[in-house]
Image (cartoon, rainbow, N blue to C red; front, side):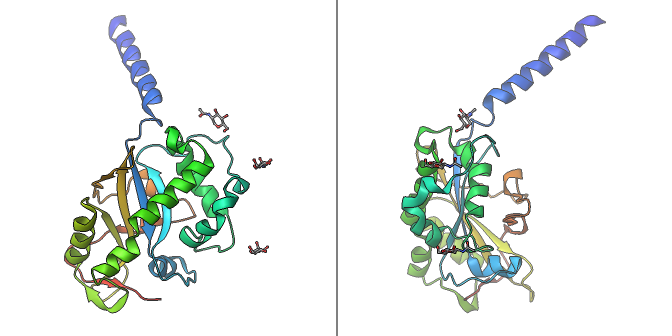
Length: 235
Ligand SMILES: *[C@@H]1O[C@H](CO)[C@@H](O)[C@H](O)[C@H]1NC(C)=O
Ligand SMILES: *[C@@H]1O[C@H](CO)[C@@H](O)[C@H](O)[C@H]1NC(C)=O
Ligand SMILES: *[C@@H]1O[C@H](CO)[C@@H](O)[C@H](O)[C@H]1NC(C)=O
């Protein structure tokens, strides 16, 4: 009767140590998340003057809050602070660095196992670099997808983005728009660990890393419905 117990213990121990070794260092994908300030602020009751897609974050696909002893320090990113304020604003608390601190602690400390992202300066600069390279607002405009009181068909938006980048985005909406419509809210563009574009997964159930606690409650965005009209709200 002893043997199975011993075996089970061994198996248990092996699983735990494997999980420990693989996580959180074992991410394979980075998710560059943009949000549409007007939709975000309608949900979060903030006020925004941003008429372009802003950064929400750069998230590894695995791992969360990987190193609590690595404190955020805004003086390490002083040289890029103007771009941070423009491209990665805290929509709920303008003039605060709290959003960046939160994103660093939750996602940056996990991304930092990659040599290209292993400092706060590298992490935030790389996110800004990818954001500018992707230039989502201009790409949408190029396809005549602009904020409007007219509704869009979802597949038109999705295929414009996918065809342009050659990779599948994940597009999320606020589903509380009324009148059978949904509002464009969040667009994710994915990269592999070499920063090459990659298809995003389109899971409908939010994975843990997206369930913000208190701060950016992106969990309220869900993948857009293919068949419902899409509202892309102007300022
Ligand atoms: C966590 O961050 C601290 C401070 O930067 C660093 O000294 C330490 O090596 C990190 N630990 C791990 C496991 O990366
Ligand atoms: C933040 O970083 C700066 C520059 O490296 C350093 O002088 C300062 O002591 C750091 N602040 C904290 C609270 O660690
Ligand atoms: C807001 O930002 C300005 C300019 O960057 C700064 O001088 C001021 O102290 C900030 N206010 C608060 C409440 O943080």
